[in-house]
Image 1 (cartoon, rainbow, N blue to C red):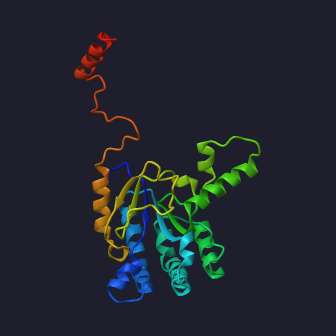
Image 2: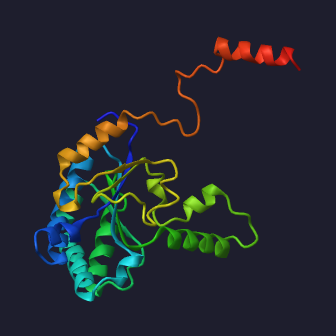
Image 3: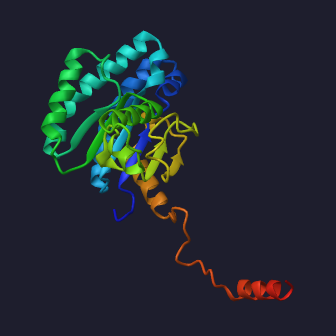
Length: 250
């Protein structure tokens, strides 16, 4: 797909509500939703996306019931075991950002192994945000810069370079599934100029075909980054005439 959309970020929301509507425990929605991740990763790669960042677990999610948190841990571990060979075969560069210190050691070992093996791969940059919060990332980045550059004034480029995965750059498109319309402390710096797309589809029902339709729809939007479109005529004759009339009355 020919598009200016190179970096897509997704808030994978609606798992619990999807399960509740079917009279199942919330964790059943997470299990079902975990199977969608692989399909969307493949769809992103197929559609020429260069970076895909997925919000898997926020810093606020620690307040959820422990059994639900435990299931999310197990699903991450299972994904790494199941998908690592395919990610390597497709030359996907994989990384987890956030505070992973509370993950089981076996899961942390899998993450480290996969990150080290794929860090130089030229393909899709796949990032999982786990125990992640954007405010936490910005504070951490500022503190890192201050400790490494005492007394120096920080710039935007400096701050960007201190983020957890600076090479992915700004987000072009943020998608949130599940019907909610907020960004929930996700990549706040990186989405400054992103296009936003909120779909009522809950994550377990999100499909590669809908993902592609969203890409096609958003790619038709005109992204001006605060400027004017090529079709805008700042020297419109009627405007020039109005200015002349106003000047004559001064």
